Length: 162
Ligand SMILES: Nc1nc2c(c(=O)[nH]1)N[C@H]1C(S)=C(S)[C@@H](COP(=O)(O)O)O[C@H]1N2
Ligand SMILES: [Mo]
Picture 1: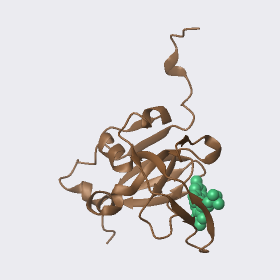
Picture 2: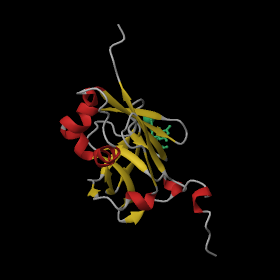
Picture 3: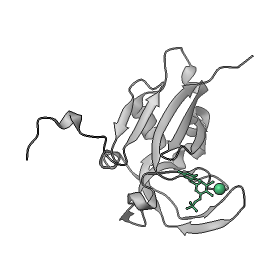
């Protein structure tokens, strides 16, 4: 049945929010993530930083670069050059938090392999497998910045505290 009340619908399951100091905060469903240019990652072994435990081998992920989404949301620009002091805090649905800096993402090769993935080994990732998954393909120990059920990317502009 057609409805005129679509705006009252609950947020799409698996939706990703970009908020904080972005120029244009965004909310994207997995379907919307698929509309952006995608990148295919190389397979890797998931290994925990804290214990060095081998978790599992991961088939190639497909997803959108985090830099693509950040550019869409617009880097902070209230003060000239402040975008270079920005950190991006990625938060899972369970509250798990990891950080990326503007320099790391936009001014080192690391950023080229940071993806928000929605496919693995050619198959769509489902919620059970943790979609969408944020991961940093150039990390030495990949598990910490392999965030399952990514919920939010928050832009924070840092200043020196003293
Ligand atoms: N959302 C979320 N993702 C996460 C974590 C977490 O606590 N929450 N822990 C990370 C760490 S430290 C490890 S070792 C792996 C564990 O992966 P597993 O749950 O598939 O064994 O998930 C990573 N991704
Ligand atoms: Mo870990």
